[in-house]
Length: 218
Length: 218
DNA sequence: ATGTAATTGATAACTATTATCATGTCAAGA
DNA sequence: TCTTGACATGATAATAGTTATCAATTACAT
Ligand SMILES: [Mn+2]
Ligand SMILES: [Mn+2]
Ligand SMILES: [Zn+2]
Ligand SMILES: [Zn+2]
Image 1 (cartoon, helix red, strand yellow):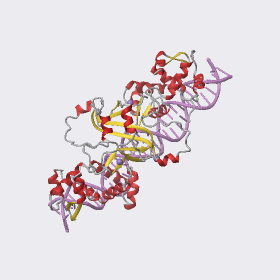
Image 2 (cartoon, rainbow over the protein chains, first blue to last red):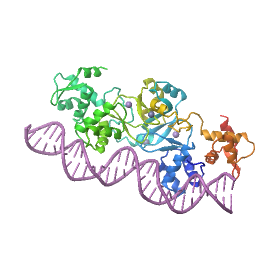
Image 3 (cartoon, rainbow over the protein chains, first blue to last red):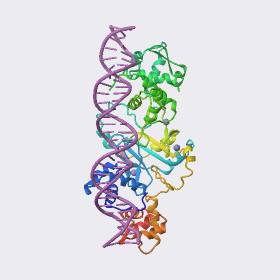
Image 4 (cartoon, each protein chain N blue to C red):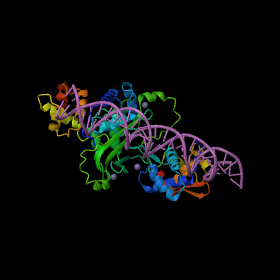
């Protein structure tokens, strides 16, 4: 534990660059900028100081999702939005009222010390750039799916197909009925069996259970 | 890109263990459980399958803050709370209404595709365990500080001390006035100078600026 | 101006994750 | 049931991001 923090030239430049850039750079981003002024600085020094400075409360360390740490010059309390494509991070305003609505719930006996709200999206730049990549129908991102159910999209499709036919059918039939490219079907069925929504009366034959019909009708 | 997913024994056990454990394990956690049933399984297989299964929509990959990926058997849309001490992750319920309040704001031109709400706290177990560690006054965690201001806590203290005295003072005086253990003070002062709230009329002497007084009175 | 504890740069080490590849296995059709 | 080739596995190397180590240097209170 160090007793006194010294304001070294390196620290000064790091702070300067962080305040200048206006973004939420990673240690590496910052290193690239800082070394223009201090060509002999070590990446370790940048990491070390970002850590120390954030512990001292001079800057803030963001624990946004993703593998890399990011840092913020702005000490005010705020939340962030990040681009799922280019990873850039921007500030968002969340009103006290919004935060209060959230904080008022039950929280499994936890003592709350913080709340992180993080929007995911496509930044304007990336949106334009990706007009050509429209084939990727679905992007599994974050915790949110467009449909609401405890079944996955494909699971629901498979189950619906099974509900249609009276007689137990094979995975090829299901592929035809669902239009799912024969891919993953056996996998989905295994999951559905595990959940008790599907049974296999004979090898490679499947049918929906009562429980399965029930979940479909929700 | 693979055409058919096969339900291998390894996959089956991985799914089984994930559904059983009821937590939000990391690949490594899961590996430890799975290898009790499949002692020869490779960690790479666990990683590989968690990735594949989540892409197939059989399980969900959580991109909660922190460096390690976690996985969730529950496909329903929900958010999480995690313990700042032991890192365990639990589910929380957030109502549609709460989520809507958040989503209705401006978002810097981003196209929204997801929203992550993450509470941070101390789980009941860790709370009990840490009755003895009360010296660490402050835990810089997440994005939230208890005080609201664009100044850090210590910065405000230093600035307040400077506002008190008419004559420029040295860092030792400030240490005495604030009770801050002489630590970090020069660092805080440098930051305050950079922000324009403090000036140095002479070497090692500091005084508050007009701008500094202004920010204090907010 | 001086002594010394804090800091630096270079680099090794570490953690989490992904890629590679030779070998093994599953499942659909004959 | 047997065959066959795409798919999956285990072992291990490689990678990305970050942290630790340590001898040499430097800031700063006095
Ligand atoms: Mn920010
Ligand atoms: Mn969950
Ligand atoms: Zn973008
Ligand atoms: Zn805990």
